Image (cartoon, rainbow, N blue to C red; front, side):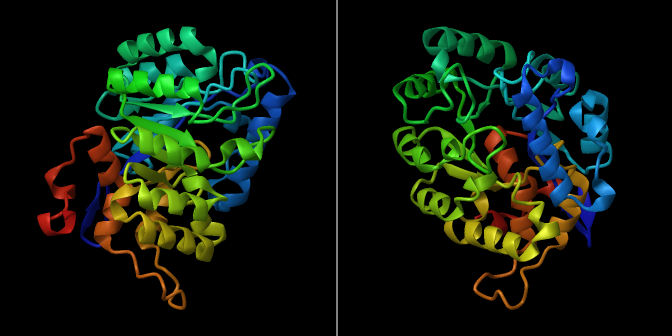
Length: 332
């Protein structure tokens, strides 16, 4: 919980990871390219006081994750959104077993989402059923630009992806998180295009599609899709650290999201360990739209509370203490 000026903010970090990018886990040069690109995002968008040494960044482990999120970072609940990247890493990039073990050890603090890849076809569908039972899945994280053999990505509206989404519906997996944001070397930029969200959201109105990174750099395309598809939500991972380096750009991003989607469909994410949540939470609570950008109204305390945690808590059924809830008139 974060407290400022007499207000209590319940914090749900809706996009965290526990990864292993050490050289011994890198399958090829692409594993190094990927983590180096991650580190460049971290280095270029973080305050100097928050920079990690490169070696720490390759693998940080569960103990540090728990400290950075829950001891130092004000986080009340965090949701794992792992990426497999099996073409680049021997045991995968996101560490399933370690993350799930942490989730079982701290069930009130962590939720584990898993992943699927529709290019595994029938075998992958059976694995999805097994994973849903084992992990108690409420959500999955999709990386549509992931490589598999000669394939360098897939789309949400591919026939096999629809089979998997139908299976998610059957299994009660309602929250579909999709990386639709900046390209990470060596993945292809166009494989993260947001256009396929439109059709899938229309055809699966009972599922939530959380577009991580709110489609950047395709913010306008994303907003036009999301405004007509009420089951499409925006995740602020990668967008929110621009408060530090490009505050006017972030003001435009959050202003457009509030205009098109409204305050109930935006979720805070640190994208840990790309960034640590402490400074992001502090700065977001203090953030104000520049006075000369008057086409956007100022964010209210209620809006900030929803974005920082109440929206994701509602989506995942996370209990919110009474002192952090909004008055009934602010919820409507």
